[in-house]
Length: 132
Image (tube, rainbow, N blue to C red; front, side, top):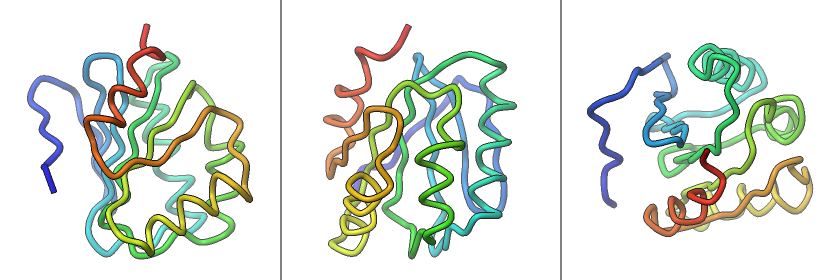
């Protein structure tokens, strides 16, 4: 796995995720072993909105280290948690995470264009047209 590298951006970090904006893309990189419940979903959304300062962005979500995303969190992210986002690319690396992402896309039906990727460069290429 290639690491997601940052150097020149503001960061908001909490106990389970690191959020940054770089070159018009918002990055949400989850920490190892994270179980995303509704409380964490709301916290990461609040942190993200603070970082965004009312500007719309595409988001790159790195779920490679996430253990589980609970149902209520998936529903929240697909709807209320998508405010000020215009597209989402989700990076996964295991069949378990792929199942989570596919379930999110097919069942929760996000309100923004959302695709899953195993390669971070393909994911970022997908998001580039959504940058301003």
